[in-house]
Length: 247
Length: 305
Ligand SMILES: Cc1cc2nc3c(=O)[nH]c(=O)nc-3n(C[C@H](O)[C@H](O)[C@H](O)COP(=O)(O)OP(=O)(O)OC[C@H]3O[C@@H](n4cnc5c(N)ncnc54)[C@H](O)[C@@H]3O)c2cc1C
Ligand SMILES: Cc1cc2nc3c(=O)[nH]c(=O)nc-3n(C[C@H](O)[C@H](O)[C@H](O)COP(=O)(O)O)c2cc1C
Ligand code: FES
Image (spheres, rainbow over the protein chains, first blue to last red):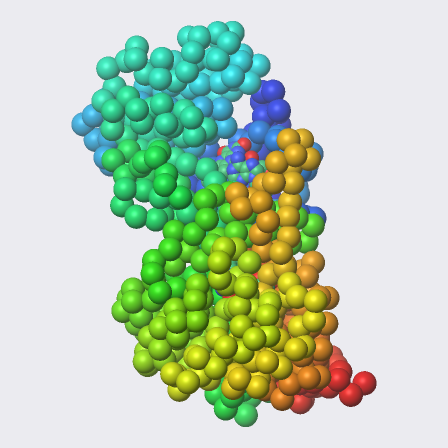
């Protein structure tokens, strides 16, 4: 984890209630795709965790959906604004596990952003990659071109069928012969992916106190013990995950 | 002597700033972030006899100038803590280590306290009779004079290290409870733990935290904590560790003026990982500004004003 001040380079709407923000600042603590940052927003007490979509040499891109106070304030931020950010949080995806496998990167809604750099790293590693991007509707969809430009076969699903396959990302997955996945999205999506029995890595979300492992605010039960989503996660292997929580 | 030095029951602290229990884990993970040896002390995560998962998530909600938490004392159990966590933190930290102890019966408090009493790494035993996030226990012992006294007496009888009773603000009058602890032999008082609070989603009407009600802390509770430190300091002779909403050097000076010998920083560690080093660096600057030579000199100065 590093803490620093980051400058907003751009901040624009890219889909319904969805914004892309580019920041400049220290990216040295980002080691893997799927890590996140924690943003201090003036006037709000807790920081807001957002995944890193893309990073390279002192620049990073995040994509966020306006769902409440903090993301609402963020959507109005202008170029040049400085933000207090904790960077390099969480474990991120271990893409080396995808070597020699037919990999899918699967994102649902605002789970799509971290899959961008994941796909990019997999390609750099020599993998052939299929992206399966799930959205509620056509209006909520974003980044399809960006994934295609990476040279990734891109399958889109929407809940209402307004774009791509009507259905969920699991319906998209069925049309491929992928034998390993990297996924981020709402819990029901992760649960149905897990149920396919295909192995992979899943990235989870939880309300956080600190985001760096000291408060135990984000703990979940796994098959390998109690884990903090912010520090031991947010990414877990499908073999570690259970959706039958006793607590 | 350093200007920032203070003491608790004869134990020297480099400075009065201690991360509060539950907001700093078992300490060692923060060693990657800054040198822990600048800290006056560290109060470790609340520990019970058996391993506990704690409460289901969501355990956290935001509110105006603070947060609510319902961790529910997640910890790996005292045996694991003594065997694995204490050596790890001691290898990285040479200051005062405070064990934070919870239980569901007097007997459990005593057992956990004895395990830490026998652990050479630990300097002070902090008995949490004030956790609002567990049923049948925790706070129940801290909201009743007889029960608080009974836990104190039982722990004191079986242990040798200084015993600090950590009290709950969720009472009509904190003074008789603090007095009961002092009379039962407590070496000091830590106060306050979290206030029982609530946050509801206005759209759905549903409480945000899984336990519905949970522990409220952060800057918003500072006036309550300060008032209680002041009241207790007027009523007991044993030292006080002040805690509640502290986020800057001025807050430390206020709490020490009200009668605290040292302070703990809780919620602020979560939103600002450098909270404690920032406060420690700011203290001498503020002391110069206010003409304070040594921080010890101001302990309780407000009581006479
Ligand atoms: C590891 C991680 C990565 C994330 N990545 C992204 C991303 O790339 N893009 C994106 O749009 N969103 C992402 N989220 C969700 C994002 O953190 C929340 O949408 C955001 O915190 C909402 O803040 P708010 O102030 O607008 O909402 P409010 O409802 O006003 O927030 C109130 C409190 O609840 C918390 N909260 C609300 N919803 C969530 C949630 N879904 N997850 C965690 N905390 C929540 C807030 O952080 C805040 O503390 C991520 C969450 C986590 C844990
Ligand atoms: C996430 C969290 C976990 C906590 N866990 C404990 C605990 O295990 N034992 C304890 O005595 N107090 C615990 N507390 C209470 C704090 O130590 C402190 O007394 C309280 O939060 C008030 O201080 P603050 O306003 O600076 O947070 C916890 C507080 C928070 C926010
Ligand atoms: S949010 Fe604090 S430990 Fe994960």
